[in-house]
Length: 125
Image 1 (cartoon, helix red, strand yellow):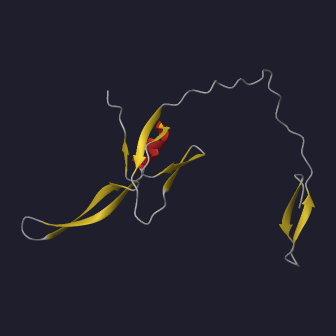
Image 2 (spheres, one colour):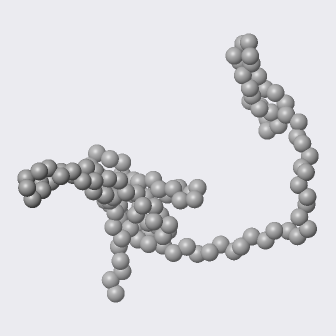
């Protein structure tokens, strides 16, 4: 194991990882005159959704938003942030569909569909 001040690089002749110490540089950044102030966290709007179950598939769907992951169970009404619903809505693919035209010719079209079938549960009231 190496400590935080070391990293490993492969040796040229032996192919073995060798720990090499790293010198820390002094920061050239000027200190800020005022301490930074973080904004208070904003309460995110939540939406209740149900992701449809898929036969033979996993019993959850993993969705990532801005570096944060959500493991959403399938077939269960779940409250998720509004941004997660945006990701689910944007998960679109296309499939090729054939149909007969008015003169009997075969017409091929791409039709969009949701990769992750889901629905939004609205309050009745």
